[in-house]
Length: 113
Picture 1: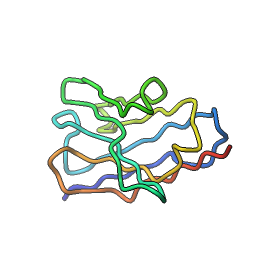
Picture 2 (picture 1 turned 90 degrees about the vertical axis):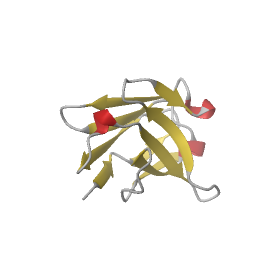
Picture 3 (picture 1 turned 45 degrees about the vertical axis):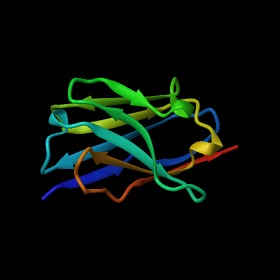
């Protein structure tokens, strides 16, 4: 049984930082491409960033240079370091393994202006 548990969200002022974590059980992150998605009140759930099995990273253009996705294989955890946050980054953030149907409960990020 696969479980994904996101954490690390919170309320932060614009320009601030947060680091999100996604811990997995029942699946090995380092053997899979793992992505972060976010859902906002005005948009469908959208892809934010990915990390491949060999560590290649990809980012949605608006977050490139501000967000960093990384992985700790020993902890089976994927992180999303978010710097220079903007109000538009507000939303609920989820992680997901490519090709798998599982979603966690998400972690809420609120950026105040």
